[in-house]
Length: 397
Image (tube, rainbow, N blue to C red; front, side, top):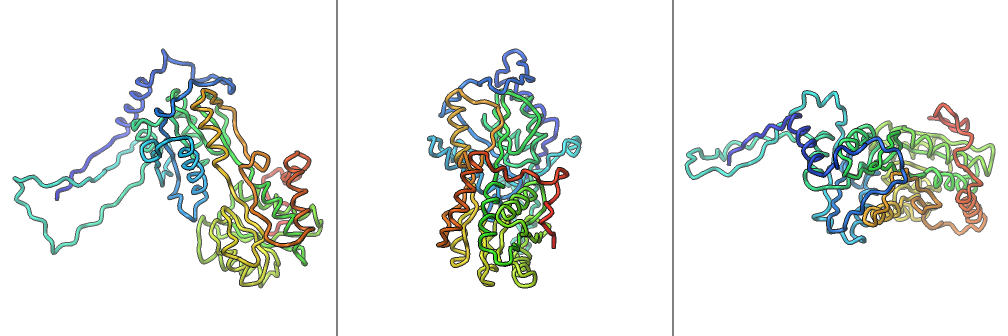
Protein backbone atom coordinates (compact mmCIF):
# COMPACT_ATOMS: atom_id res chain seq x y z
CA UNK A 1 0.00 0.00 0.00
CA UNK A 2 1.39 3.38 -1.03
CA UNK A 3 0.48 6.79 0.33
CA UNK A 4 -0.21 9.79 -1.88
CA UNK A 5 -0.13 13.31 -0.31
CA UNK A 6 -2.64 15.92 -1.46
CA UNK A 7 -2.03 19.62 -0.80
CA UNK A 8 -5.10 21.84 -0.34
CA UNK A 9 -4.30 25.54 -0.35
CA UNK A 10 -6.18 28.54 0.98
CA UNK A 11 -6.51 29.84 -2.57
CA UNK A 12 -8.34 26.68 -3.55
CA UNK A 13 -10.69 26.93 -0.57
CA UNK A 14 -11.50 30.58 -1.27
CA UNK A 15 -11.97 29.85 -4.97
CA UNK A 16 -14.32 27.03 -4.04
CA UNK A 17 -16.36 29.29 -1.81
CA UNK A 18 -16.60 31.91 -4.54
CA UNK A 19 -17.66 29.31 -7.07
CA UNK A 20 -20.30 27.95 -4.72
CA UNK A 21 -21.66 31.43 -4.10
CA UNK A 22 -21.89 32.09 -7.82
CA UNK A 23 -23.42 28.69 -8.55
CA UNK A 24 -26.02 29.02 -5.78
CA UNK A 25 -27.71 31.82 -7.69
CA UNK A 26 -26.99 35.11 -5.97
CA UNK A 27 -29.52 36.80 -8.29
CA UNK A 28 -27.28 39.49 -9.71
CA UNK A 29 -25.45 40.54 -6.58
CA UNK A 30 -28.10 40.49 -3.87
CA UNK A 31 -27.78 43.12 -1.18
CA UNK A 32 -26.13 41.30 1.73
CA UNK A 33 -26.70 44.19 4.11
CA UNK A 34 -30.46 43.67 4.38
CA UNK A 35 -31.26 44.42 8.01
CA UNK A 36 -34.93 43.48 7.94
CA UNK A 37 -34.89 40.51 10.31
CA UNK A 38 -38.58 39.84 9.63
CA UNK A 39 -38.12 39.28 5.88
CA UNK A 40 -38.58 35.62 4.95
CA UNK A 41 -36.39 33.51 2.70
CA UNK A 42 -37.83 31.13 0.12
CA UNK A 43 -38.91 27.75 1.45
CA UNK A 44 -36.47 24.84 1.15
CA UNK A 45 -38.15 21.56 0.25
CA UNK A 46 -37.56 18.82 2.79
CA UNK A 47 -35.95 16.58 0.18
CA UNK A 48 -33.51 19.37 -0.72
CA UNK A 49 -32.57 20.23 2.86
CA UNK A 50 -29.08 19.31 3.96
CA UNK A 51 -27.65 20.36 7.31
CA UNK A 52 -24.01 20.91 8.19
CA UNK A 53 -22.86 21.18 11.79
CA UNK A 54 -19.72 22.83 13.20
CA UNK A 55 -18.65 21.61 16.64
CA UNK A 56 -15.55 22.62 18.64
CA UNK A 57 -15.15 19.21 20.28
CA UNK A 58 -16.31 15.62 19.95
CA UNK A 59 -19.77 16.30 21.45
CA UNK A 60 -19.33 13.25 23.66
CA UNK A 61 -20.91 12.55 27.05
CA UNK A 62 -18.69 15.15 28.74
CA UNK A 63 -19.55 17.95 26.29
CA UNK A 64 -22.34 20.52 26.50
CA UNK A 65 -22.50 20.40 22.68
CA UNK A 66 -23.79 16.86 22.91
CA UNK A 67 -27.23 18.19 23.83
CA UNK A 68 -27.46 20.53 20.85
CA UNK A 69 -26.43 17.73 18.51
CA UNK A 70 -28.96 15.32 20.03
CA UNK A 71 -31.73 17.92 19.82
CA UNK A 72 -30.89 18.77 16.20
CA UNK A 73 -30.67 15.13 15.15
CA UNK A 74 -33.95 14.28 16.86
CA UNK A 75 -35.72 17.25 15.26
CA UNK A 76 -34.34 16.43 11.82
CA UNK A 77 -35.50 12.83 12.07
CA UNK A 78 -38.96 13.88 13.25
CA UNK A 79 -39.19 16.29 10.32
CA UNK A 80 -38.53 13.40 7.95
CA UNK A 81 -34.87 13.94 7.07
CA UNK A 82 -32.53 11.02 6.47
CA UNK A 83 -29.78 12.15 8.82
CA UNK A 84 -27.33 9.66 7.32
CA UNK A 85 -27.42 11.49 3.99
CA UNK A 86 -28.89 14.89 4.86
CA UNK A 87 -26.59 15.83 7.73
CA UNK A 88 -22.82 16.28 7.84
CA UNK A 89 -21.10 16.83 11.18
CA UNK A 90 -17.69 18.44 11.54
CA UNK A 91 -16.08 17.97 14.97
CA UNK A 92 -13.02 19.49 16.64
CA UNK A 93 -13.26 22.64 14.52
CA UNK A 94 -11.52 25.27 16.66
CA UNK A 95 -9.28 27.26 14.32
CA UNK A 96 -11.39 30.30 13.43
CA UNK A 97 -8.56 32.81 13.12
CA UNK A 98 -8.47 34.48 9.72
CA UNK A 99 -4.86 35.56 10.32
CA UNK A 100 -3.85 31.97 10.91
CA UNK A 101 -5.36 30.98 7.57
CA UNK A 102 -3.58 33.52 5.35
CA UNK A 103 -0.69 31.16 4.64
CA UNK A 104 -2.78 28.11 5.27
CA UNK A 105 -2.01 24.69 3.81
CA UNK A 106 -2.61 21.16 5.02
CA UNK A 107 -1.40 17.77 3.93
CA UNK A 108 -4.01 15.06 3.85
CA UNK A 109 -2.52 11.60 3.51
CA UNK A 110 -4.70 8.98 1.91
CA UNK A 111 -3.95 5.35 1.20
CA UNK A 112 -3.80 4.26 -2.46
CA UNK A 113 -3.66 0.57 -3.47
CA UNK A 114 -0.37 -0.46 -5.06
CA UNK A 115 -0.59 -1.15 -8.81
CA UNK A 116 0.35 -4.47 -10.42
CA UNK A 117 3.54 -2.89 -11.74
CA UNK A 118 4.71 -2.09 -8.26
CA UNK A 119 7.60 -4.22 -7.17
CA UNK A 120 7.87 -2.73 -3.68
CA UNK A 121 6.71 -5.13 -1.02
CA UNK A 122 5.67 -3.81 2.39
CA UNK A 123 8.15 -4.56 5.15
CA UNK A 124 6.00 -6.43 7.66
CA UNK A 125 8.78 -6.30 10.23
CA UNK A 126 8.63 -2.50 10.43
CA UNK A 127 5.55 -1.08 12.17
CA UNK A 128 3.63 1.50 10.19
CA UNK A 129 4.37 5.07 11.20
CA UNK A 130 1.43 6.84 12.79
CA UNK A 131 -0.14 9.50 10.59
CA UNK A 132 -0.71 12.85 12.27
CA UNK A 133 -4.27 14.02 11.66
CA UNK A 134 -4.72 17.78 11.49
CA UNK A 135 -8.15 19.06 12.47
CA UNK A 136 -9.92 21.09 9.85
CA UNK A 137 -9.98 24.85 10.17
CA UNK A 138 -13.38 26.53 10.20
CA UNK A 139 -12.82 27.68 6.62
CA UNK A 140 -11.98 24.17 5.45
CA UNK A 141 -14.89 22.64 7.32
CA UNK A 142 -17.42 25.18 6.05
CA UNK A 143 -16.11 24.85 2.50
CA UNK A 144 -16.50 21.08 2.73
CA UNK A 145 -20.05 21.41 4.08
CA UNK A 146 -21.23 23.81 1.40
CA UNK A 147 -19.52 21.95 -1.45
CA UNK A 148 -21.18 18.83 -0.06
CA UNK A 149 -24.58 20.39 -0.63
CA UNK A 150 -25.38 21.80 2.81
CA UNK A 151 -27.80 24.72 2.59
CA UNK A 152 -28.15 25.07 6.37
CA UNK A 153 -25.11 25.33 8.65
CA UNK A 154 -25.45 25.10 12.42
CA UNK A 155 -22.52 26.69 14.26
CA UNK A 156 -23.01 25.32 17.75
CA UNK A 157 -20.45 27.45 19.62
CA UNK A 158 -19.87 31.14 20.23
CA UNK A 159 -16.33 30.80 18.87
CA UNK A 160 -17.79 30.89 15.35
CA UNK A 161 -19.66 34.21 15.72
CA UNK A 162 -17.25 36.35 13.69
CA UNK A 163 -16.62 33.59 11.18
CA UNK A 164 -20.29 32.94 10.37
CA UNK A 165 -20.93 36.67 10.08
CA UNK A 166 -18.29 36.79 7.35
CA UNK A 167 -19.41 33.59 5.66
CA UNK A 168 -23.13 34.41 5.68
CA UNK A 169 -22.38 37.61 3.78
CA UNK A 170 -20.48 35.63 1.14
CA UNK A 171 -23.11 32.89 0.80
CA UNK A 172 -26.56 34.55 0.91
CA UNK A 173 -28.36 31.37 -0.20
CA UNK A 174 -27.05 29.34 2.74
CA UNK A 175 -28.84 29.67 6.09
CA UNK A 176 -26.59 29.98 9.13
CA UNK A 177 -27.77 29.20 12.66
CA UNK A 178 -25.23 30.61 15.09
CA UNK A 179 -25.26 29.87 18.82
CA UNK A 180 -24.71 32.92 20.99
CA UNK A 181 -25.16 36.60 20.34
CA UNK A 182 -23.74 38.67 17.52
CA UNK A 183 -24.19 42.04 15.86
CA UNK A 184 -24.62 41.09 12.20
CA UNK A 185 -28.06 41.62 10.71
CA UNK A 186 -28.22 39.42 7.64
CA UNK A 187 -31.40 37.73 6.36
CA UNK A 188 -29.70 34.32 6.25
CA UNK A 189 -28.04 34.47 9.69
CA UNK A 190 -29.96 33.67 12.87
CA UNK A 191 -28.49 33.84 16.35
CA UNK A 192 -29.92 31.51 18.96
CA UNK A 193 -29.23 31.20 22.68
CA UNK A 194 -30.62 29.73 25.87
CA UNK A 195 -31.47 31.05 29.32
CA UNK A 196 -30.23 28.12 31.37
CA UNK A 197 -29.59 30.56 34.19
CA UNK A 198 -33.36 30.55 34.84
CA UNK A 199 -33.18 26.88 35.83
CA UNK A 200 -30.20 27.66 38.07
CA UNK A 201 -32.32 30.25 39.86
CA UNK A 202 -34.81 27.47 40.66
CA UNK A 203 -31.97 25.30 41.93
CA UNK A 204 -30.90 28.19 44.17
CA UNK A 205 -34.41 28.47 45.60
CA UNK A 206 -34.43 24.74 46.32
CA UNK A 207 -30.92 24.88 47.79
CA UNK A 208 -31.92 27.59 50.28
CA UNK A 209 -34.99 25.60 51.27
CA UNK A 210 -32.86 22.52 51.95
CA UNK A 211 -29.71 24.04 53.42
CA UNK A 212 -29.48 24.22 57.19
CA UNK A 213 -26.36 26.36 56.97
CA UNK A 214 -27.69 28.40 53.98
CA UNK A 215 -24.33 27.68 52.36
CA UNK A 216 -24.09 25.89 49.03
CA UNK A 217 -21.12 24.70 47.00
CA UNK A 218 -20.84 25.08 43.23
CA UNK A 219 -18.42 23.18 40.96
CA UNK A 220 -17.65 24.61 37.52
CA UNK A 221 -15.10 24.05 34.76
CA UNK A 222 -13.72 27.05 32.93
CA UNK A 223 -15.18 30.33 34.15
CA UNK A 224 -16.88 32.16 31.29
CA UNK A 225 -19.93 34.38 30.88
CA UNK A 226 -22.35 31.46 30.90
CA UNK A 227 -20.89 30.09 34.12
CA UNK A 228 -20.99 33.56 35.69
CA UNK A 229 -24.69 33.82 34.82
CA UNK A 230 -25.36 30.33 36.19
CA UNK A 231 -23.65 31.04 39.50
CA UNK A 232 -25.19 34.50 39.92
CA UNK A 233 -28.68 33.19 39.16
CA UNK A 234 -28.18 30.31 41.59
CA UNK A 235 -27.04 32.77 44.26
CA UNK A 236 -30.01 35.05 43.51
CA UNK A 237 -32.39 32.14 43.97
CA UNK A 238 -30.87 31.36 47.35
CA UNK A 239 -30.93 35.01 48.43
CA UNK A 240 -34.61 35.28 47.50
CA UNK A 241 -35.32 32.68 50.19
CA UNK A 242 -32.64 33.69 52.69
CA UNK A 243 -30.77 36.96 52.37
CA UNK A 244 -27.90 35.59 54.46
CA UNK A 245 -27.16 32.68 52.15
CA UNK A 246 -23.81 32.23 50.40
CA UNK A 247 -22.33 30.26 47.52
CA UNK A 248 -18.79 28.87 47.50
CA UNK A 249 -17.50 28.44 43.97
CA UNK A 250 -14.73 25.98 43.04
CA UNK A 251 -13.43 25.86 39.48
CA UNK A 252 -11.35 23.17 37.81
CA UNK A 253 -10.09 25.83 35.39
CA UNK A 254 -10.51 23.50 32.39
CA UNK A 255 -13.35 22.04 30.37
CA UNK A 256 -12.92 18.55 31.75
CA UNK A 257 -11.01 17.18 34.72
CA UNK A 258 -12.33 13.87 36.02
CA UNK A 259 -10.23 14.09 39.17
CA UNK A 260 -10.85 17.70 40.20
CA UNK A 261 -14.58 17.59 39.50
CA UNK A 262 -14.91 14.92 42.15
CA UNK A 263 -12.35 16.17 44.67
CA UNK A 264 -13.59 19.77 44.57
CA UNK A 265 -17.11 18.60 45.36
CA UNK A 266 -15.73 16.51 48.21
CA UNK A 267 -13.85 19.52 49.59
CA UNK A 268 -16.93 21.74 49.39
CA UNK A 269 -18.95 19.17 51.31
CA UNK A 270 -16.39 18.15 53.92
CA UNK A 271 -13.92 21.00 54.37
CA UNK A 272 -16.18 23.96 53.65
CA UNK A 273 -19.27 22.40 55.25
CA UNK A 274 -21.58 23.09 52.31
CA UNK A 275 -24.71 21.03 52.72
CA UNK A 276 -25.91 21.47 49.13
CA UNK A 277 -23.85 21.00 45.93
CA UNK A 278 -24.63 22.39 42.48
CA UNK A 279 -22.60 22.13 39.30
CA UNK A 280 -22.15 23.36 35.73
CA UNK A 281 -19.90 20.50 34.59
CA UNK A 282 -21.66 17.78 32.64
CA UNK A 283 -20.18 14.71 34.27
CA UNK A 284 -21.93 13.22 37.28
CA UNK A 285 -18.80 13.15 39.45
CA UNK A 286 -19.92 16.00 41.76
CA UNK A 287 -23.19 14.07 42.23
CA UNK A 288 -21.26 10.99 43.26
CA UNK A 289 -19.24 13.00 45.79
CA UNK A 290 -22.35 14.69 47.17
CA UNK A 291 -24.13 11.36 47.55
CA UNK A 292 -21.15 9.89 49.40
CA UNK A 293 -21.09 12.90 51.72
CA UNK A 294 -24.88 12.75 52.17
CA UNK A 295 -25.41 16.23 50.75
CA UNK A 296 -28.25 17.32 48.50
CA UNK A 297 -27.24 18.03 44.91
CA UNK A 298 -28.47 19.26 41.54
CA UNK A 299 -27.52 17.59 38.28
CA UNK A 300 -26.73 19.42 35.05
CA UNK A 301 -27.16 18.58 31.38
CA UNK A 302 -29.14 15.37 31.79
CA UNK A 303 -31.12 13.58 34.49
CA UNK A 304 -28.45 12.58 37.01
CA UNK A 305 -30.80 11.00 39.53
CA UNK A 306 -29.31 7.56 38.88
CA UNK A 307 -25.90 8.86 39.94
CA UNK A 308 -27.14 10.19 43.29
CA UNK A 309 -30.23 8.12 43.93
CA UNK A 310 -30.90 9.44 47.42
CA UNK A 311 -29.65 13.03 47.40
CA UNK A 312 -30.22 14.30 43.87
CA UNK A 313 -33.05 16.85 44.17
CA UNK A 314 -33.49 17.45 40.44
CA UNK A 315 -31.39 18.11 37.35
CA UNK A 316 -31.22 21.10 35.02
CA UNK A 317 -31.69 20.12 31.38
CA UNK A 318 -31.82 21.53 27.86
CA UNK A 319 -34.50 20.53 25.36
CA UNK A 320 -32.86 21.71 22.16
CA UNK A 321 -35.42 19.97 19.97
CA UNK A 322 -37.78 22.81 20.94
CA UNK A 323 -35.68 25.29 18.96
CA UNK A 324 -34.50 23.08 16.13
CA UNK A 325 -37.98 21.69 15.40
CA UNK A 326 -39.30 25.22 15.21
CA UNK A 327 -36.57 26.55 12.94
CA UNK A 328 -36.71 23.54 10.59
CA UNK A 329 -40.46 24.10 10.21
CA UNK A 330 -39.76 27.76 9.41
CA UNK A 331 -37.12 26.86 6.80
CA UNK A 332 -39.26 24.28 5.01
CA UNK A 333 -42.39 26.44 5.32
CA UNK A 334 -40.86 29.60 3.86
CA UNK A 335 -41.13 31.42 7.20
CA UNK A 336 -37.47 31.55 8.22
CA UNK A 337 -36.70 34.79 10.01
CA UNK A 338 -33.29 36.02 11.10
CA UNK A 339 -34.74 37.52 14.27
CA UNK A 340 -32.61 36.26 17.21
CA UNK A 341 -34.05 33.47 19.34
CA UNK A 342 -33.65 33.03 23.08
CA UNK A 343 -35.19 30.04 24.85
CA UNK A 344 -35.82 29.58 28.54
CA UNK A 345 -38.44 28.17 30.89
CA UNK A 346 -41.31 29.89 29.08
CA UNK A 347 -40.36 28.37 25.74
CA UNK A 348 -39.62 24.98 27.26
CA UNK A 349 -36.06 24.95 25.95
CA UNK A 350 -34.64 24.71 29.47
CA UNK A 351 -36.32 22.98 32.39
CA UNK A 352 -35.77 20.95 35.52
CA UNK A 353 -36.53 17.29 35.97
CA UNK A 354 -39.11 16.09 38.47
CA UNK A 355 -38.39 17.08 42.07
CA UNK A 356 -37.35 13.88 43.80
CA UNK A 357 -37.63 15.01 47.41
CA UNK A 358 -41.04 14.68 49.04
CA UNK A 359 -41.24 18.16 50.52
CA UNK A 360 -44.39 20.21 49.95
CA UNK A 361 -42.79 23.52 50.94
CA UNK A 362 -39.85 22.91 48.62
CA UNK A 363 -42.07 21.97 45.68
CA UNK A 364 -44.27 25.02 46.19
CA UNK A 365 -41.30 27.38 46.45
CA UNK A 366 -39.81 26.05 43.22
CA UNK A 367 -43.16 25.99 41.41
CA UNK A 368 -43.97 29.56 42.45
CA UNK A 369 -40.55 30.80 41.37
CA UNK A 370 -40.88 29.06 38.02
CA UNK A 371 -44.27 30.64 37.37
CA UNK A 372 -42.92 34.10 38.24
CA UNK A 373 -39.93 33.69 35.95
CA UNK A 374 -42.22 32.67 33.09
CA UNK A 375 -44.53 35.63 33.73
CA UNK A 376 -41.58 38.01 33.91
CA UNK A 377 -42.17 38.96 37.53
CA UNK A 378 -38.81 37.46 38.51
CA UNK A 379 -35.72 38.29 36.46
CA UNK A 380 -32.96 35.98 37.73
CA UNK A 381 -30.08 38.22 36.67
CA UNK A 382 -31.54 41.51 37.88
CA UNK A 383 -29.09 43.27 40.15
CA UNK A 384 -26.00 41.26 39.16
CA UNK A 385 -22.71 43.21 38.91
CA UNK A 386 -22.53 45.31 35.75
CA UNK A 387 -18.84 44.49 35.34
CA UNK A 388 -19.62 40.85 34.61
CA UNK A 389 -18.33 39.59 37.95
CA UNK A 390 -19.94 37.50 40.65
CA UNK A 391 -22.52 38.67 43.16
CA UNK A 392 -21.44 39.59 46.68
CA UNK A 393 -22.83 36.37 48.12
CA UNK A 394 -20.50 34.32 45.89
CA UNK A 395 -17.06 33.45 47.19
CA UNK A 396 -14.45 31.74 45.03
CA UNK A 397 -12.53 29.07 46.97
